[in-house]
Image 1 (cartoon, one colour):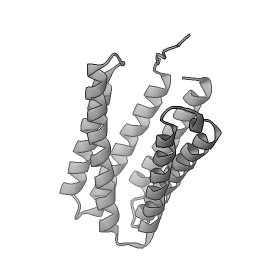
Image 2 (cartoon, rainbow, N blue to C red):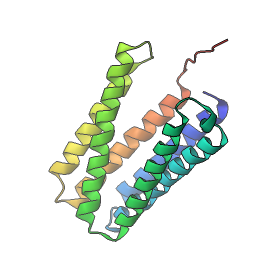
Image 3 (cartoon, rainbow, N blue to C red):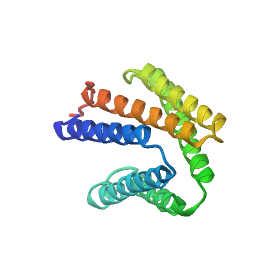
Length: 178
């Protein structure tokens, strides 16, 4: 991992921590709109980054079209997420629960794949997936009380921020083909 990627990981983690603390200190109905805006912006940036990467480099790579398709799908999710700003908060909360549950399942599957291959620490990925599933379940249980759901979401955001900062400083191995 390069120095720029480490700095970017730490900065994103710090921004996530600040946003989570703001959600905990000032819980209100406007938090849902802010969550949707931040999520839509993050997804849009990730989708556009993948699309730009395709046109700059990945079109010459094996499997490069998958990066283009991935970028287009992520950008579509960004548009869908941005459209949720004007719907009732229960739908926003259900959408966030779905995102947490989906990312938890994906992390667990990635951990199992890493366990079977030569990749590094799979236990941390597995734990992260379990925490995401637990947060989704807790939000689903306390869906009627919006302040509790915001607190649970903020705790999940804090956990993800700490994991992102921790992963930024973790050594990563790469394979060099000569």
